Image 1 (cartoon, rainbow, N blue to C red):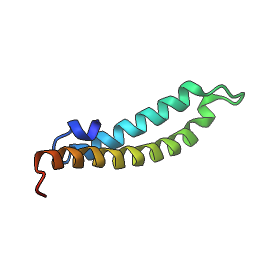
Image 2 (cartoon, helix red, strand yellow; image 1 turned 45 degrees about the vertical axis):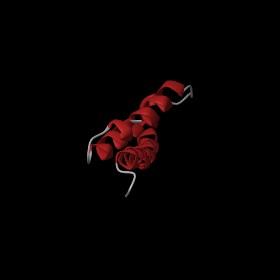
Image 3 (tube, rainbow, N blue to C red; image 1 turned 180 degrees about the horizontal axis):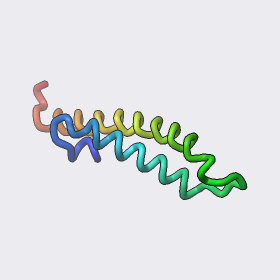
Length: 74
C-alpha cells in the first residue's frame, strides 16, 4: 500500500523507510534476551536494512500496480 499511495519516485524512500522501521521496531519490541539491548542494536540495524530492501521491493510492486491500473495499455 505504501507504493500504491506514493507519487513518482517517492515509492523508493517510502518503501525503504517503512520496511526499515517496521523490521527494527519489531525486533526491539520483541527482544527479551539476557544481553543488554544496546549490544544488540548493530545486529538489529543490519536486519533492519534487510527489511528496508524488502520494503523497497514491495514499494515498487505497489507503485507498478497503481501505474498499470491507470494505464492498462502499457
